[in-house]
Length: 187
Image 1: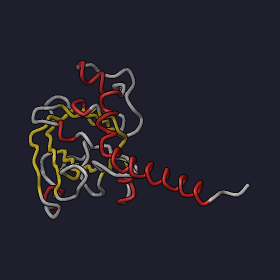
Image 2 (image 1 turned 180 degrees about the vertical axis):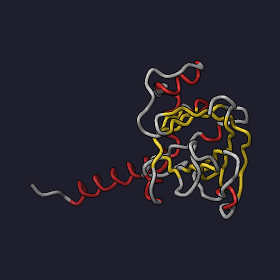
Image 3 (image 1 turned 180 degrees about the horizontal axis):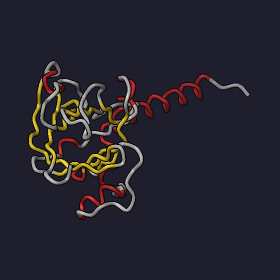
């Protein structure tokens, strides 16, 4: 069966229209998904102030104000394309210091796990499950810095959780930074 030039042109036009629709709609999909998604189990228990029925075996970040429950990935920058990256050499709940986490806010191909980070406010709760232990933090600062402001990654003597992503949405012009301190008695 041979295709006529008109059929080929119609098919190609359809492909171009579909690609254009994808490019236009992709930035809005996480916003729609946020509205219709089921609340993950760890987020639901955190919102109720309850302990979860089962502690995750993998290191996991939970931010109830974002409905976020994501595994933390170790390794080089390629881990950033899997989800939330725990930067090598930064602190942890066990060792103290500045625990630095990063993730994409928007990508056309990878996970946009921190798309809703602008919903996080001072005073919000953040929970880190680390080595099968639960650590609770409270957001102390939310601010924007230039991409060159690497001081947000510097080690600290006191325990600190630093999470950052690109901002404004769909660009890498700046970094949106959330810093949280451990809640007394919850670390």
